Image 1: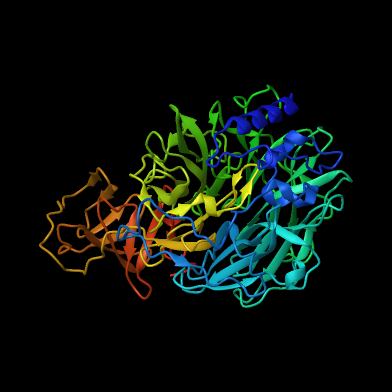
Image 2 (image 1 turned 90 degrees about the vertical axis):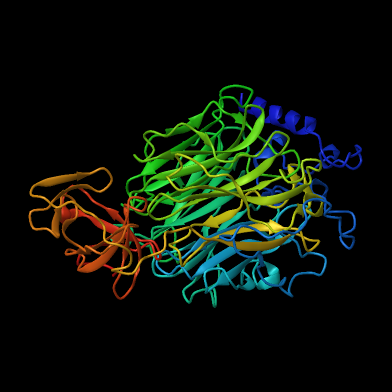
Length: 633
């Protein structure tokens, strides 16, 4: 039955209109490829493009533009200024000189941020895309100023061009732990049947240098090959497995007995890895697109796509999550995220059709997932959330408001530490409906944990032309995924990374995304606020219950003793919080946000937990979690 589903997808892809009509001689899918004997031909549509070389599929599968020296006209939406919260588009440095002159287009961008130092941001991407799968190497770019400027280089010791042994590399993703160590997770590619390897490179000096890559996993069986790796690091310092690095991947078993999600972990900073891969899903499952995410208590959630191996179509496909309560050693049963949706495959771009994007907030551990689907005949970026470790999920909502006739691709998600500000980036053709080849990067944004969504905003200043990207059997290749990290308060914008063709060749670009906050006020500014003070308890519709017998001291049922500044003004209340020993500002629109004054002023999110002594906070600027009298200021 599973083979029937793959065949169905192949037929769908053949029926999908392509922008440039191809004859049988020109169409990559019309050639006789050098498949390995054990490979089921229909399975190739579920393999990431970087694995093609490892399968020995030959150079006919992928084609770049006929003449890279001739730039295709961007005849759609011209360059334009963006809304004030969105920064300038920044190209992530020049192409490394080690790349061959004719191999300088990039693909598959990803991004990560230091959880305690928001200025440290790292991106990863393919460098020098081959026409038959994989890249000359994978590269990285590091920013020490929150994404304003970048330094860029190839990953040392990975492929032959940088002193390594692999012929090519693919599927780069990045992670940063709570100590500032940077991890780059890649797929090292050698021709079939020797197979692909899961590799991890580490920097302990903020990206100034990287150690030689370490092999984290190799194919467990002779006929197996590995694909679509992803990485997560436990950056919660007070948990049992703090610092653990986990990488998940898909194991294609070409005998049609299963395509399970597997994983390995390291507890010594990536120097050594668990000797045997761990089954995240059963050996006989058929899955792809794993997304490991650590939760604040040290549990590990892995979200993935399950093809379900039931019918010959795709209506029974599901997105699921499994939870490991020991941080990646043993996984629990599957929990349904969403099912019964119409699968969407972009007709031009190779996109993350079967690659959901997942993340979690650092406060309460809510899980957030996005994916692409067809709703009412229109492709949409979809969203759902769980606040109970995947046991239940909100009804899926469309986060994108793209109109009829437009297409979307490759959504990626991030969420602020407090779980309120959700950002999803994606490719979108809405600005050029007459030409499906021209696309922009767009932003979907929610300020209430995904319950409602703002009108989408454009992030890219200029359109990109898909025809400048290599042509694979699955579409024009800019990558199967994108990357975005959240804003951490008003001084630390979020950062998105994508592949852009405005220079005439696919290049990595980044853009900053501010999170709007109300301006802090000075104590005593404005007219006096009329706050009733009478004996007994008062009930505020937004701030809760408080006792006023010692007015202007009040005792709040969840925050304890607070002194009310009677000259707070009409736009909010200034309080001296005795537990924090600091002045704070709040109002009806900001609560449960406080603006914390003192030596390190900034916004903090409060988590009242029934009693004043049990409350804790998360700083918006750094993501640091603290309680009164302990932790970060």
